[in-house]
Amino acid sequence: MIDWFIGLSHPIQAMIATLFTWSITAIGAGLVFCFKKMNKNVLDAMLGFAAGVMIAASFWSLLSPSIEMATNLGMNAWLVAFIGLFGGGLLLFSGDRFFSRLEKRATKASNNNTPKGNVKRCWMLIFSITLHNIPEGLAVGVAFGSIAYGIEGATLTSACMLALGIGLQNFPEGTAVSVPLRREGFSRRKSFFYGQLSGVVEPIAGVIGALIALQARMLLPFLLAFAAGAMIYVVVAELIPESQTNEKKDIMALFTLVGFSIMMILDVALG
Image 1: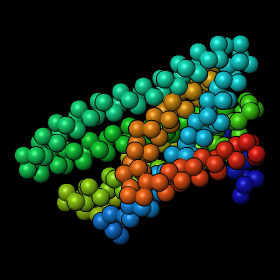
Image 2: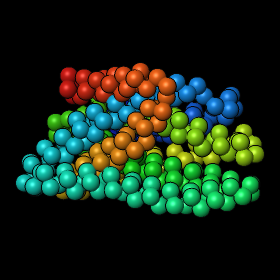
Image 3: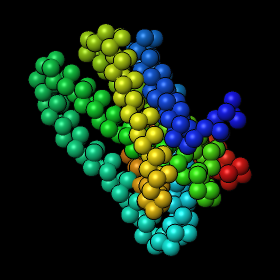
């Protein structure tokens, strides 16, 4: 099975990896069939672990290869890394600000006790999570596409671990969509459908990211740094703050260290 996967083209590898991240979203959404909500400790531990994996992957799998490749191509490495990193974070920051404004309008409507306002807020949640999944899919695709150039840090192991980290943090996202929809009166099937649908953009973005990385080599250093910026923003703005709302936040911090350590070992020792 491993040999079969290694023998595939990088866009196909990216597609399979992002289908995995989508499937984790679907599993999270599927909890609507079992529970109204999942144990918070488990969710927060998963978020903390995913945060650690993604922080390590942002450097060893994305940013470091970006700097190395920019140097090999005769580009200004620190400028390329800065533009890409800041651009990735700025994109998600802008998206968050935009949807925060929309959410405030929906909240005002729901405060008037109108079911329409509550449903509107749920739809905006679906839309915002779907949009936020696009750069995550691109990040996985770029990670797989960059393997073709043989640069240090850009390995099949690191790309797979990046997909694992993104998949883990997709689990509560699927639940975060399906459970509110169920609460607003949607059937379990519809709640699940829309919950998993929020992750369907990742395989599409993953293949696009891999193709861009393979076809536009001069853009790859920017794309790698861009993906790193998007990942770091997600970690700092969402994963760590959410995991730290737990009463056992010190333990959740340990899960972040565990995730970081595992990813670091895989990248440095096996990379």
